View (cartoon, rainbow, N blue to C red):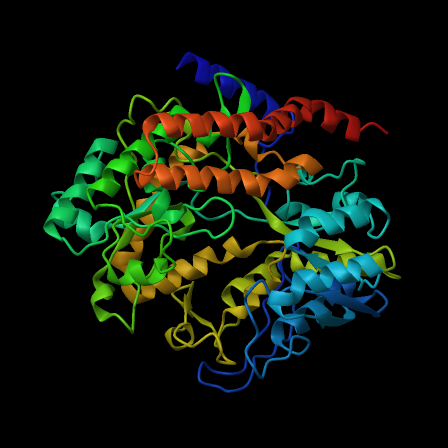
Length: 573
């Protein structure tokens, strides 16, 4: 595919202009001893930390900050859905105590309920009622905080980052380039999101594939379709293919996107993809791949292989457990490392959901099979740590971020405390089984502590998760991990797609029309699949959609074409 390769060269040039291929240097010269733990796995008390000692490779964070003035600081921190169990105080536990002691500060953390967090934070930003350190997610991350930063609500952190002890070892200079503001400044430290398998493909029922496909994965799209039909024939009550209905925007997701993935389209539907031949963004609805995949779904619907209620069902999770759904489109990092256990449906405990093998070839209509499993990301997530301009001790506030970015603090959040959440066996950390089985509401559980990984990122806990899974069933865990390797390796050889560029702000016209465009696309797609539209009617619906909503992709293409210039202008003194 000469044109594709030419397009890849263009993308490479765009990405290399930002230096995104340089790897992160995660070495850390400020290694210190972990806090000691006193309670056993069965203790009802919370663990206490006593950071002390001197690391072999240099001073600890506690040593570095010991001679500095002890000041009072405030922070607002999102739990990120990792809610603290009843009986645990966010301001009085081993992890918060470590932050206080290692940074030598008095720290008061405010933590609104997770469901209310973003809204309350936006109100505080709008009113100027800001704590010293601010953790942003959601709309506060994407819109409210950046706008407030440009208006002077937050401090530029460029100099702090350049002179950091730990932060720059976690977040690379290239990653900081991704989140630079339009005025050329960096106002926040982003969350690193690396360490999980990359890419997206089909996560499917290996137990059914093994039984009905001679113990091997299908290698082509027609083989997959034939397998779906065979399973339906052998198991008439099986649902085989269904949909996780999205009530707003584009309607088809997960199970509803299986056939689209088999035609080289993204896991998430209704969005823009990059046309490598034309070097422009285009909505997938307008592509030949989309039309071909939708025609297959129409055929499967007529044969009863696709759930007849796919367009209206709200029982995706129940159906997945009980109706023998065979596959879903999903990300490689969503492959479960442990067997699912359903108390309400014991028969479902035999299900083995695993990442399917890549295809040996795609249908001829698929123009860009090289990117069918996704492309690289910039290794960041939608979390940000800001320091308010009103902070009276910004140097000391950044010391707190330095602690949170230290190797020791990561280990404390990932593995916990020796004797509490892990033990040493032959020089290796091994999770304590009793702790791994505790409910997330148990005060002694080791799970909620990951919320402090706002710089290192939640994927940093992958080694612990793998160790826990292997304790339970090492063979199964290894099979699950290995199933993601081929997709991860394929994506790792690629690049960051132009559709992943940061900094794009939609115009008012695009913002007003995006949801409407997705709904219109969904309606036409579902009606065609269910036989309510002829081929000619569907073609006309696609043409009408392009006439009304095609400007959305055109606007984004203009942004991509101006990206290099925008980046250069942003750095002009």
